[in-house]
Image (spheres, rainbow, N blue to C red):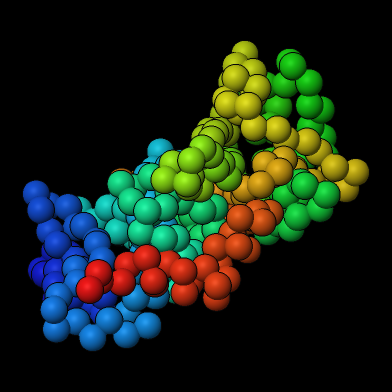
Length: 276
C-alpha cells in the first residue's frame, strides 16, 4: 500500500504502480513480476499502459516543464504526468517495441493540469482551432511578440501581459527496417511564448518550425502533424508556483488507433508471457 510522507511524497505500492523516493524525488515504475504474481489481464493492462506513458514522457520532457500546478514539495512533473494519464486511453506495445524507453505512441494524454481556464480547441482540416481570439494579428515574417501580446490581451479579457502561451506538437514516427528494428516513436517540438512588450524579437524565432495561422473567425490555429498531435497551454507565474490550464493533446494519429485495439492488447500481453 502506498503511504504519504510528511512532505506529501508517495512511497510504496498502488495497484501495479511502485512509488519510490530518492534524493527528494519521487519515481513511478511498473511493479515487477514475481512468481506469485497472478498476472491477471487487468494487472498486465496497467503495466502496458504505464510503459507508453513513461516512454513518451522522455520525448516530451522539455515541453512538460512546470505544466503541473501545485505539486507536493519536491514532487516532479514526471510523477504528476504519469498519475494524470494512467486512466487515459491505453496504448499496447509489445515488449520489444517498448524496450529501452524507445517506443512511444502519440496518445490523447493530459499535458498540463492546473486551475487556469482551459484553452478550448477542435480539429478542422489538419488544424487545431482554438477559442483564443487574435483577429487583429497579422502574421508575416515581421510579426513580433508584442503583436501577439497585444492581440491576445486585447481580445481575451482573462489574459494579461506576463502570461505564457505554450504550443506543443508531437509527430508520430516509425523506426523501420528488419522486424527487430521496427517500432513507433515520438518527436516533440514546443514553443514557450512569454507575452511581453518586446517589439524587436520576431515571433517566428520562437516557433521552432511550428505552423500557426489566424482563421476567418479570428481564432489562433496550430498545424497538427499529419500523424501526431498538438496542444496549447496557458501559464501564469504565481509566486514560486506556475499556474496552468488543464489541457489534452489533441491527436490525429492512425498509429494510436492501431495500438489502442484489442488485437494489439493481446499481442502485447503475449509478448510478455514467461517462457516455459
